[in-house]
Length: 405
Image (tube, rainbow, N blue to C red; front, side, top):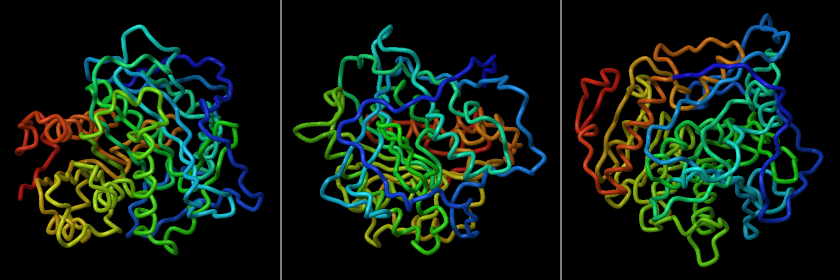
């Protein structure tokens, strides 16, 4: 349940420790005008509001994400990775490709610092400027959302499957925090990846926030190019998390033989694109994303894949094509009363700035369903625990329709 309470004055929050020298983007890179995606693009519904939406006299509310449902406390670390063998695909003059990650993991009780910030104030400012330019609510309303993960808590004993999460186009990685914390509480290490220049803003360890350089160029670039670029991002992340000299100090908790990936919107397509080129990813989930980058006609070498989205996907030709090409365990699930943003924290953020939710299913319920089905999928395919929830309709979840092979 969404918990509301008074807000304290919040300072701007910076990113955590760096693992490489930060870059300076060229001065010519600036935040673009808000994007209007064509109907065929599965970009999230804009957080737009009429000009009459005004800022409150003061910041009066703060929200907390719904409590994670698993038995473990949750820790979070922040990583800055630099791929020195690859120039940034969108701003080559900026130098090597840089990535920011939030690592969530099962933690030992009573360890770690305060709960980790939801996002930086500058990331929130960029998000509002891009997706809700007529809203004058202070960015601290967004950055001040309270989480459950404790910064740099000591990890629980044992080794855990790794799930990589990739967010939707234009949205920062924080918008999948509700799902990431829940997976970690259930016994997963989670790498939540920001893909710079593809979202509203990414704050680097030096405090610089990179703008969205391609948000108004999606149609010209093509969703397939974005998905394939993200696949390269994720393969590099796996190299740095599971290689001989891992970038994360707690990498010992990762079981490199049990890796899955899920994503929202273009991030969901990126899960399939990553699987097509990287055999280390054993299972994937697309949450309401168009398949711009096609699954190979021969499938994904029998690896399991879940298509989980809104009812509108019933008319998406890319889903029908992909369904036919998938050659392993597969499910096509749609959730009545949801829209494109329902599988993320976006409805909560929209509510905080006074934008009505367009979906019939409230945020708490859509997040609960997303958590339940995504976790069940990975429990079955990464942990080897059969999940009857995936076998057909559930009387407890009448919103969810299930298509079997």
